[in-house]
Image (cartoon, rainbow, N blue to C red):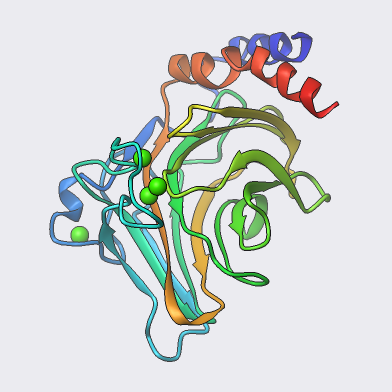
Length: 265
Ligand SMILES: [Ca+2]
Ligand SMILES: [Ca+2]
Ligand SMILES: [Ca+2]
Ligand SMILES: [Ca+2]
């Protein structure tokens, strides 16, 4: 509890007017996506740029960026909650062969202590060893944080300092997860991952790969599979209002964080 209280106090003491990313939100129901999902689309509000599409190792042009319902992967939307769709759709990335499809966007400025970033993710199993779905925060050109579903771990994984990937304890299923991350200093973060179908939540304190405040984010999928396209759905990218952030990300999960540590210990 002590560390959680320190975080709350630190947020409350953030000087008025300190540089921080603007409150922001975009989701796939925005009118910018009524004509499809194109490179440069800039729906919602509060972000620094629109979306940028990139592909790697894709000579056949088989990677795809578009819209689709996140209820179609795996064995479907088993609990009937629409998974991560808004207005019946989510952003959809597909990769084939050894290709990668990646989606970038910038915040209005670097995240600060007192900011948070959240999104919904819905993925499918990709055979090991090299296929994965991922989310990254970047500080300039450097990866600061990495979250992924790999083919070799049944749970979502996250990066912690130089320890490469650790297990979140949240099973990677076809129903989707809500992910929120808040920098707690220039070198550390608090991560919260909630499985949408079960409500099971993990709260994790970790360290960035790269010191400094992230100013970009990226979603990607790598197929490593020559017979089937591999799909990632993402939706509802949000820099919440500070009041919502404090309640949802920092204050409320403190007891959960303690219980998670106890279980692991
Ligand atoms: Ca569009
Ligand atoms: Ca799904
Ligand atoms: Ca299902
Ligand atoms: Ca569901």
